Image: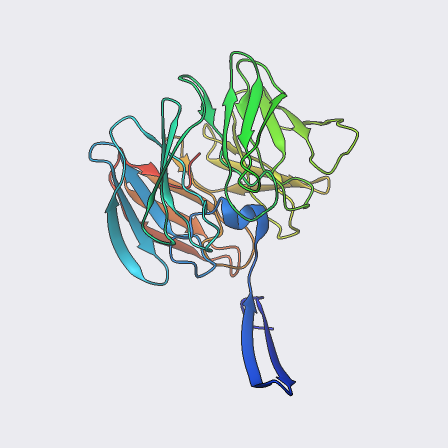
Length: 302
């Protein structure tokens, strides 16, 4: 067991037909969290990164390999970073009026997929549990989720939600699959993939003006109910019927929670006019990082 909580396994195999083989394997967190993270260098920590709509360039301050910029996108595109090719590194991707453009980190190739219609909200996630991000959209006018599974290239259409809802898809039951979920004026409606009966869960947590967030803040493998209340600069997190309240931010901030320190827990963080403020869950210290411009879109914001 390493200090960061990751496990290293060492093994040796010997057979009469071959010479001995020796291997070292480092196990990191996988599943839905890895598929939809912003870990562009694959070091297990999410990276401070932005998409600049004015020039279509992604700027990444990678925690392992340093700064880099990649031009991929056009003004008006919606950034949808995720690990679409399953190589353990986040790929740059954008959604543009029903088309997905993916810059594969595994080989530098381009994937273009037509999936969705104008007005749909992209909702990237790992809905089939194969540790690859799936192309997916939620259609507000009908409340239908359309998911293109990467495991078999088949799609599903599921009605869940209504116009005006905010999609908050995440893995709420820790089965490694993204669950359909919406937030509606303080109410959470979640269709857990582990529920074979197709029933949904309902929770009251928040008010209409809150910004709902997805993330596992306590490290139990399940997404928690999370809110950022801009009027107070306050974060509200509910897990196992326990509510945690954290004052961190001001009204103009954009919440950008992610696991920046690699401890398996989402960190409270905000983006303010090109400056990142991150409260590390591993040691309760905070970082201030100047990276980006005021109109940049944080890659972690979906």
